[in-house]
Picture (tube, rainbow, N blue to C red):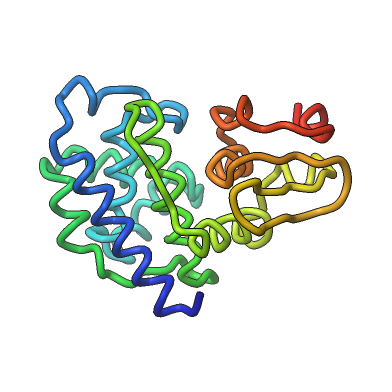
Length: 203
């Protein structure tokens, strides 16, 4: 996929997720997501952050967080969750915004919307489905530029069973692309769906 195609996919994923969560109840919004310490609503607020928070504003959050990016992310996410009521509408209305983190291309925000979309969908039992090209971009990103710690820790061959994609050498870990994306991004929820001699090396 070229950059324009990836940006179009990002916009489509944002709109799809916004439509899926637009009718959630308060109880569903409060459901713990796959992201530790974040509810499903918190995760959506995080996805809205780059659409409504300016670079100078995030810079100020970095100052308050003493240069800690993760802490600044928590600060801005909490602020967006507090200030904005209709997060799905914002995600939909600003779906075409082309923001990329410094030093990264559009594969980064595509990975963000895909993985965090699963963080919301999985606990709520919502369906997810990604085109093979999108899944490949995300899998390539988390195993390369995304710097997934598990890739460095476990010397295995990751292999998708539902599309043509693999990475690494060693004992095989195979399963659906969605499950691989979850595990490679630090979510244990995908582990039961993986198989192969390499699974024993993931602990």
